[in-house]
Image (cartoon, rainbow, N blue to C red):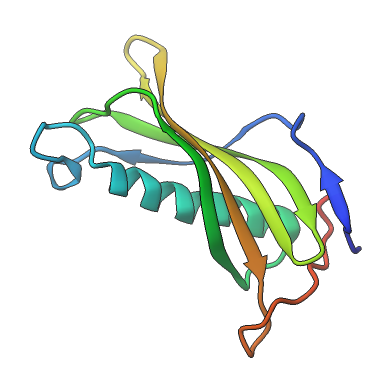
Length: 135
């Protein structure tokens, strides 16, 4: 199925994966390094889009509207959530967010949000149409 443009921003966020903040993820202030969060978001939102669209040959073209909202700390469980925002001819934009979850307190706090856009590429590295069964 081809999608010229599909707005799905009302789709609820889905949990993609979880990570534990370890000492190697911390900056000198003992908070999670922002680059680590962006790397997790890029990878995990890609996995979400790939599974939703049933297409895996995509490259990241942009990360926009990146907002760091709270620090993450050693031992935090970081949950990565995603949802599709727009599927176009050869690209997909998704919203991602990372939430620190405390299973003992059953509490969470949003750490970072962003939008990530990927472009589908063929064997030659050029953009190709996305064939999707995302509906």
